[in-house]
Image (cartoon, rainbow, N blue to C red; front, side, top):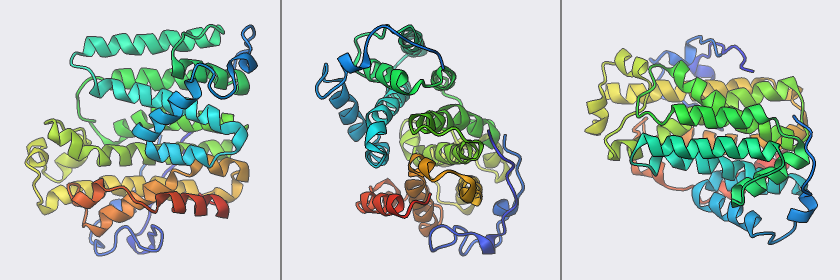
Length: 333
Protein backbone atom coordinates (compact mmCIF):
# COMPACT_ATOMS: atom_id res chain seq x y z
CA UNK A 1 0.00 0.00 0.00
CA UNK A 2 2.85 2.34 0.74
CA UNK A 3 4.50 4.44 -1.91
CA UNK A 4 8.18 5.40 -2.04
CA UNK A 5 9.11 8.46 -0.07
CA UNK A 6 11.02 11.16 -1.96
CA UNK A 7 13.58 13.74 -0.83
CA UNK A 8 12.25 17.12 0.14
CA UNK A 9 14.26 20.36 0.37
CA UNK A 10 13.56 22.53 3.41
CA UNK A 11 13.05 25.63 1.35
CA UNK A 12 10.17 23.95 -0.43
CA UNK A 13 8.40 22.62 2.63
CA UNK A 14 4.93 23.85 3.29
CA UNK A 15 2.56 23.26 6.21
CA UNK A 16 -0.45 25.45 5.59
CA UNK A 17 1.10 28.88 5.10
CA UNK A 18 4.25 28.19 7.09
CA UNK A 19 7.19 25.86 6.36
CA UNK A 20 7.74 23.21 8.99
CA UNK A 21 11.47 23.72 8.85
CA UNK A 22 11.47 27.52 9.12
CA UNK A 23 14.57 28.60 10.95
CA UNK A 24 16.01 25.07 10.83
CA UNK A 25 17.59 25.06 7.38
CA UNK A 26 20.73 23.41 8.70
CA UNK A 27 18.86 20.18 9.35
CA UNK A 28 18.71 17.47 6.74
CA UNK A 29 16.01 14.89 7.47
CA UNK A 30 13.45 16.60 5.27
CA UNK A 31 15.88 16.11 2.42
CA UNK A 32 16.58 12.51 3.33
CA UNK A 33 15.24 9.79 1.06
CA UNK A 34 13.36 6.95 2.80
CA UNK A 35 11.72 3.83 1.41
CA UNK A 36 8.32 3.15 2.89
CA UNK A 37 7.18 0.25 3.16
CA UNK A 38 -15.45 -9.72 2.36
CA UNK A 39 -17.58 -12.44 3.24
CA UNK A 40 -21.27 -12.92 2.65
CA UNK A 41 -23.37 -12.85 5.81
CA UNK A 42 -26.97 -13.65 6.46
CA UNK A 43 -29.36 -14.29 9.31
CA UNK A 44 -29.98 -11.48 11.77
CA UNK A 45 -31.28 -8.35 10.13
CA UNK A 46 -29.46 -5.03 10.37
CA UNK A 47 -32.79 -3.28 9.98
CA UNK A 48 -34.07 -5.09 13.04
CA UNK A 49 -31.15 -3.82 15.09
CA UNK A 50 -30.97 -0.38 13.51
CA UNK A 51 -32.68 2.86 14.22
CA UNK A 52 -32.31 5.38 17.03
CA UNK A 53 -31.97 3.85 20.45
CA UNK A 54 -31.67 0.18 19.42
CA UNK A 55 -30.03 -1.12 22.62
CA UNK A 56 -28.60 2.43 22.91
CA UNK A 57 -25.58 1.11 21.04
CA UNK A 58 -25.33 3.96 18.53
CA UNK A 59 -25.40 6.57 21.30
CA UNK A 60 -22.80 4.60 23.25
CA UNK A 61 -20.34 4.64 20.34
CA UNK A 62 -20.91 8.31 19.65
CA UNK A 63 -20.34 9.27 23.29
CA UNK A 64 -17.26 7.06 23.55
CA UNK A 65 -15.77 8.83 20.54
CA UNK A 66 -16.66 12.28 21.79
CA UNK A 67 -14.82 11.61 25.05
CA UNK A 68 -11.89 9.51 23.87
CA UNK A 69 -11.26 10.46 20.24
CA UNK A 70 -12.62 13.96 19.79
CA UNK A 71 -10.84 14.59 16.50
CA UNK A 72 -12.12 11.30 15.10
CA UNK A 73 -15.58 12.23 16.33
CA UNK A 74 -15.49 15.55 14.48
CA UNK A 75 -14.18 13.94 11.28
CA UNK A 76 -16.90 11.29 11.38
CA UNK A 77 -19.61 13.94 11.75
CA UNK A 78 -18.58 15.33 8.35
CA UNK A 79 -18.94 12.03 6.51
CA UNK A 80 -22.00 11.44 4.30
CA UNK A 81 -25.08 10.67 6.40
CA UNK A 82 -25.35 7.09 5.12
CA UNK A 83 -21.77 6.35 6.25
CA UNK A 84 -21.70 8.17 9.57
CA UNK A 85 -22.98 5.51 11.97
CA UNK A 86 -20.64 2.88 10.51
CA UNK A 87 -17.68 5.25 10.89
CA UNK A 88 -18.65 5.87 14.52
CA UNK A 89 -18.71 2.10 15.10
CA UNK A 90 -15.33 1.61 13.44
CA UNK A 91 -13.65 4.36 15.42
CA UNK A 92 -15.28 3.21 18.66
CA UNK A 93 -13.83 -0.25 17.99
CA UNK A 94 -10.40 1.36 17.59
CA UNK A 95 -10.84 3.30 20.84
CA UNK A 96 -11.78 0.14 22.74
CA UNK A 97 -8.56 -1.50 21.58
CA UNK A 98 -6.42 1.59 22.18
CA UNK A 99 -7.65 1.83 25.77
CA UNK A 100 -6.53 -1.66 26.69
CA UNK A 101 -2.82 -0.90 27.09
CA UNK A 102 -3.34 2.02 29.46
CA UNK A 103 -6.05 0.35 31.55
CA UNK A 104 -4.25 -2.84 32.56
CA UNK A 105 -1.71 -3.61 35.26
CA UNK A 106 -0.64 -6.96 33.80
CA UNK A 107 -0.02 -7.97 30.21
CA UNK A 108 -2.02 -11.18 30.73
CA UNK A 109 -5.18 -9.14 31.28
CA UNK A 110 -4.50 -7.21 28.10
CA UNK A 111 -4.04 -10.44 26.14
CA UNK A 112 -7.39 -11.68 27.46
CA UNK A 113 -9.13 -8.52 26.30
CA UNK A 114 -7.53 -8.76 22.88
CA UNK A 115 -8.66 -12.38 22.67
CA UNK A 116 -12.19 -11.21 23.44
CA UNK A 117 -12.08 -8.83 20.47
CA UNK A 118 -10.59 -11.45 18.18
CA UNK A 119 -13.46 -13.80 19.03
CA UNK A 120 -15.91 -10.89 18.70
CA UNK A 121 -14.76 -10.19 15.14
CA UNK A 122 -15.01 -13.89 14.29
CA UNK A 123 -18.54 -13.97 15.73
CA UNK A 124 -19.50 -10.83 13.81
CA UNK A 125 -18.57 -12.51 10.55
CA UNK A 126 -20.60 -15.55 11.66
CA UNK A 127 -23.53 -13.15 12.10
CA UNK A 128 -23.58 -13.70 15.86
CA UNK A 129 -22.16 -10.60 17.62
CA UNK A 130 -22.00 -10.51 21.43
CA UNK A 131 -24.31 -8.13 23.28
CA UNK A 132 -21.70 -5.43 23.63
CA UNK A 133 -22.53 -1.94 22.23
CA UNK A 134 -19.45 -1.50 20.03
CA UNK A 135 -19.63 -5.09 18.80
CA UNK A 136 -23.28 -4.66 17.79
CA UNK A 137 -22.60 -1.42 15.92
CA UNK A 138 -19.55 -2.94 14.24
CA UNK A 139 -21.68 -5.90 13.15
CA UNK A 140 -24.14 -3.49 11.53
CA UNK A 141 -21.28 -1.78 9.70
CA UNK A 142 -19.91 -5.10 8.45
CA UNK A 143 -23.36 -6.10 7.20
CA UNK A 144 -23.97 -2.79 5.44
CA UNK A 145 -20.60 -2.42 3.76
CA UNK A 146 -19.13 -5.93 3.61
CA UNK A 147 -16.02 -4.71 5.43
CA UNK A 148 -12.79 -6.65 5.00
CA UNK A 149 -12.16 -8.83 8.02
CA UNK A 150 -8.37 -8.75 7.56
CA UNK A 151 -8.14 -5.03 8.34
CA UNK A 152 -10.05 -5.46 11.60
CA UNK A 153 -7.85 -8.36 12.65
CA UNK A 154 -4.70 -6.42 11.71
CA UNK A 155 -5.67 -3.68 14.16
CA UNK A 156 -6.19 -6.19 16.97
CA UNK A 157 -3.01 -8.16 16.23
CA UNK A 158 -0.81 -5.06 16.07
CA UNK A 159 -2.22 -3.57 19.28
CA UNK A 160 -1.75 -6.93 20.97
CA UNK A 161 1.93 -6.97 19.99
CA UNK A 162 2.21 -3.39 21.27
CA UNK A 163 1.19 -4.40 24.80
CA UNK A 164 4.90 -4.79 25.54
CA UNK A 165 6.28 -1.53 26.96
CA UNK A 166 9.16 -1.29 24.53
CA UNK A 167 10.39 1.68 22.53
CA UNK A 168 10.29 1.39 18.76
CA UNK A 169 13.69 0.25 17.54
CA UNK A 170 13.55 2.53 14.51
CA UNK A 171 11.22 4.80 12.58
CA UNK A 172 10.35 1.93 10.23
CA UNK A 173 9.00 -0.11 13.14
CA UNK A 174 6.80 2.82 14.16
CA UNK A 175 5.57 3.12 10.57
CA UNK A 176 4.77 -0.60 10.47
CA UNK A 177 2.70 -0.20 13.63
CA UNK A 178 0.87 2.73 12.03
CA UNK A 179 0.33 0.75 8.83
CA UNK A 180 -1.47 -2.04 10.68
CA UNK A 181 -3.52 0.25 12.91
CA UNK A 182 -4.16 3.74 11.52
CA UNK A 183 -3.86 2.71 7.88
CA UNK A 184 -6.16 -0.29 8.36
CA UNK A 185 -8.68 2.08 9.94
CA UNK A 186 -8.52 4.31 6.86
CA UNK A 187 -8.85 1.38 4.44
CA UNK A 188 -12.03 0.37 6.27
CA UNK A 189 -13.31 3.95 6.17
CA UNK A 190 -12.80 3.97 2.40
CA UNK A 191 -14.83 0.75 2.20
CA UNK A 192 -17.60 2.43 4.22
CA UNK A 193 -17.59 5.23 1.64
CA UNK A 194 -17.76 2.68 -1.18
CA UNK A 195 -14.29 3.55 -2.50
CA UNK A 196 -12.13 0.92 -4.16
CA UNK A 197 -9.23 2.80 -5.69
CA UNK A 198 -5.47 2.19 -5.69
CA UNK A 199 -4.59 5.89 -5.47
CA UNK A 200 -6.94 6.36 -2.50
CA UNK A 201 -5.26 3.38 -0.83
CA UNK A 202 -1.83 4.96 -1.38
CA UNK A 203 -3.01 8.23 0.15
CA UNK A 204 -4.50 6.32 3.08
CA UNK A 205 -1.20 4.52 3.62
CA UNK A 206 0.78 7.75 3.89
CA UNK A 207 -1.83 9.58 5.96
CA UNK A 208 -2.12 6.63 8.33
CA UNK A 209 1.64 6.57 8.84
CA UNK A 210 1.66 10.32 9.49
CA UNK A 211 -1.15 9.81 12.02
CA UNK A 212 0.79 7.08 13.79
CA UNK A 213 3.94 9.20 14.03
CA UNK A 214 2.07 12.29 15.26
CA UNK A 215 0.16 10.21 17.81
CA UNK A 216 3.47 8.89 19.16
CA UNK A 217 4.79 12.45 19.47
CA UNK A 218 1.64 13.82 21.08
CA UNK A 219 1.59 11.03 23.64
CA UNK A 220 5.21 11.54 24.69
CA UNK A 221 4.49 13.87 27.67
CA UNK A 222 1.85 11.43 28.94
CA UNK A 223 4.18 8.45 28.55
CA UNK A 224 7.02 10.35 30.27
CA UNK A 225 4.69 11.06 33.21
CA UNK A 226 4.47 7.28 33.57
CA UNK A 227 8.25 6.87 33.22
CA UNK A 228 8.04 5.46 29.71
CA UNK A 229 9.51 6.53 26.37
CA UNK A 230 8.47 4.98 23.07
CA UNK A 231 10.21 7.25 20.56
CA UNK A 232 12.30 5.46 17.88
CA UNK A 233 15.67 4.48 19.36
CA UNK A 234 17.60 4.89 16.11
CA UNK A 235 16.83 8.61 15.93
CA UNK A 236 17.55 9.08 19.64
CA UNK A 237 20.92 7.37 19.23
CA UNK A 238 21.68 9.45 16.14
CA UNK A 239 21.53 12.59 18.28
CA UNK A 240 23.07 11.08 21.41
CA UNK A 241 19.84 11.28 23.40
CA UNK A 242 18.91 8.73 26.05
CA UNK A 243 15.51 7.85 27.47
CA UNK A 244 16.63 9.53 30.69
CA UNK A 245 16.95 12.84 28.84
CA UNK A 246 13.23 12.67 28.05
CA UNK A 247 12.30 11.49 31.53
CA UNK A 248 14.10 14.55 32.91
CA UNK A 249 12.30 16.70 30.32
CA UNK A 250 15.57 18.16 29.09
CA UNK A 251 15.29 21.10 26.72
CA UNK A 252 18.68 20.59 25.10
CA UNK A 253 19.12 21.12 21.38
CA UNK A 254 19.78 17.44 20.66
CA UNK A 255 16.47 16.48 22.34
CA UNK A 256 14.64 18.91 20.07
CA UNK A 257 16.59 17.51 17.12
CA UNK A 258 15.06 14.09 17.81
CA UNK A 259 11.56 15.55 17.77
CA UNK A 260 12.35 17.55 14.64
CA UNK A 261 13.49 14.44 12.76
CA UNK A 262 10.42 12.43 13.76
CA UNK A 263 8.06 15.30 12.88
CA UNK A 264 9.85 15.62 9.55
CA UNK A 265 8.93 12.07 8.66
CA UNK A 266 5.27 12.71 9.45
CA UNK A 267 5.35 15.77 7.22
CA UNK A 268 6.92 13.79 4.39
CA UNK A 269 4.04 11.33 4.52
CA UNK A 270 1.50 14.14 4.35
CA UNK A 271 3.31 15.64 1.39
CA UNK A 272 3.35 12.36 -0.49
CA UNK A 273 -0.31 11.71 0.23
CA UNK A 274 -1.17 15.07 -1.28
CA UNK A 275 1.17 14.68 -4.25
CA UNK A 276 -1.33 12.50 -6.09
CA UNK A 277 -4.57 14.06 -4.84
CA UNK A 278 -5.66 14.68 -8.45
CA UNK A 279 -5.81 10.92 -8.96
CA UNK A 280 -7.82 10.21 -5.81
CA UNK A 281 -11.63 10.13 -6.25
CA UNK A 282 -13.28 13.17 -4.64
CA UNK A 283 -15.64 10.80 -2.81
CA UNK A 284 -12.62 9.54 -0.84
CA UNK A 285 -11.63 12.96 0.51
CA UNK A 286 -13.91 12.84 3.60
CA UNK A 287 -11.93 9.81 4.82
CA UNK A 288 -8.82 11.98 4.98
CA UNK A 289 -10.10 14.93 7.01
CA UNK A 290 -7.73 14.02 9.84
CA UNK A 291 -4.95 15.69 7.82
CA UNK A 292 -6.30 18.96 9.25
CA UNK A 293 -5.43 18.04 12.84
CA UNK A 294 -2.12 16.47 11.79
CA UNK A 295 -1.06 19.63 10.03
CA UNK A 296 -2.25 21.72 12.96
CA UNK A 297 -0.04 19.77 15.37
CA UNK A 298 3.01 19.94 13.10
CA UNK A 299 2.61 23.71 12.76
CA UNK A 300 2.26 24.12 16.52
CA UNK A 301 5.34 22.06 17.30
CA UNK A 302 7.32 24.12 14.81
CA UNK A 303 6.22 27.33 16.52
CA UNK A 304 7.59 26.11 19.87
CA UNK A 305 10.88 25.06 18.26
CA UNK A 306 10.12 21.34 18.60
CA UNK A 307 9.79 21.43 22.37
CA UNK A 308 7.65 18.33 22.85
CA UNK A 309 6.84 19.32 26.45
CA UNK A 310 5.53 22.79 25.67
CA UNK A 311 2.10 23.26 27.33
CA UNK A 312 0.52 24.68 24.17
CA UNK A 313 0.83 21.28 22.47
CA UNK A 314 -1.61 19.79 24.97
CA UNK A 315 -4.29 22.41 24.35
CA UNK A 316 -7.23 21.71 22.06
CA UNK A 317 -7.63 23.94 19.04
CA UNK A 318 -11.07 25.51 19.52
CA UNK A 319 -11.16 26.36 15.81
CA UNK A 320 -10.59 22.78 14.69
CA UNK A 321 -14.30 22.13 13.95
CA UNK A 322 -14.34 25.20 11.70
CA UNK A 323 -11.12 24.18 9.94
CA UNK A 324 -12.50 20.69 9.35
CA UNK A 325 -15.73 22.10 7.93
CA UNK A 326 -13.83 24.41 5.58
CA UNK A 327 -11.60 21.54 4.44
CA UNK A 328 -14.68 19.41 3.81
CA UNK A 329 -16.41 22.23 1.91
CA UNK A 330 -13.31 22.87 -0.24
CA UNK A 331 -13.10 19.15 -1.03
CA UNK A 332 -9.38 18.83 -0.40
CA UNK A 333 -7.23 16.84 1.99
